Image (cartoon, rainbow, N blue to C red):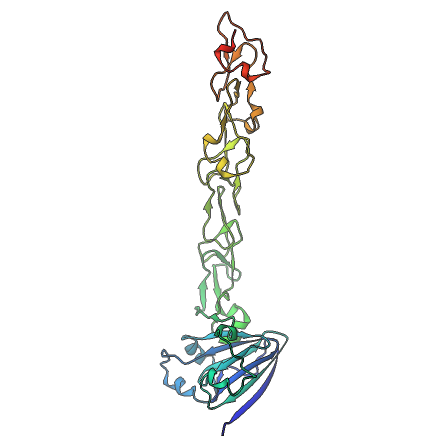
Amino acid sequence: RERWSAHLYVSADQASALGNHTDTTDVAIWQLIGRKQWLLCAPTNDDHDPFLDAKRDMCATYDDDEMGSIIANDCDVDELAPGDTLFIPKRTVHSAAATTDLSVHLTIGFESATTQDDALPVLPWLIPEVDDEDEQRRRLAQCNDCTRTSACPAGTRSTIDSDGTYACNSCDSACDRLFGNGCDRCHNCNGCNSCPAGTFSVGRASSCTDCAAGTFSGTGDSSCTSCAAGRFASSTGSSSCAVCPSGRFEASTGSSSCDICPAGTFNSDNQGSETNHDNVNDCTECPAGRFLSDDATDDDLHSSLASCIICPAGTYASSTGSASCIECPVGRFLSDDATDDDLHNSLESCE
């Protein structure tokens, strides 16, 4: 005859009815109200402690030292929401703690079922049939070991200690509750914060360093990246690089400013695309009949075609990109006074 046991557990936020323990039967869990986080440590081939291996056959609890040995092998963390179910084979060390203000779950223990599939015909209303186990045991989180004092990884800074380390027992209380106060083992439970954009750290840092001018970084970066050609970052601590403004270009990477176009040229693109500013050839030559004498001193004088001035009376410019106009030969004249560049674009314009 089948033997069963049933228990209803009601827990307040962060509370746990039972600590880490094993049962003498397989159990099925049905989460009714709120949420609970479960620690599940099934026996593995890596268990080498004969005492703990024998203890798994008992209805027993496990202290911090024993949990430290058990967690060194493979454990899962699983959080259940209302309607979720969980099958826990006997000899699995487990515990649960509420993660909401009120959490209620039902536990049914039965001796003969050895797998979840075996339990399905017996309790079809309790454990729904699903094709994907992840639908039933969702939000699975692997846990990592940490030493009692560990260095913050690259891209982060310590919020606790000035030497760039963190103490495991200062981490999230949920880790302490599930794994014991001796050492926290949860991902992201390390007392370190990501460096903000525009800064970086190489690890074991109590603060993050501003990126140098000409470089930038995103959140949590361990180094800064040089600005691409056609872009610049004029100040330290930049989270991005700006495209060069009109009248300028920058052919090099990692620049804190952009170069002004040389005499006889202009660039009318105003921070539209870096490809319009990544080479001196992006500065357009003034057309024949015009000139631009400023030689890279004022970007406002190189920002548009209007910066290229039509040659005055008596002069011409037969080449593009001219910095000045050429006077007509002696005995020849050109009466137009800077009204039409087509009248100043060759020697033949001089009558």
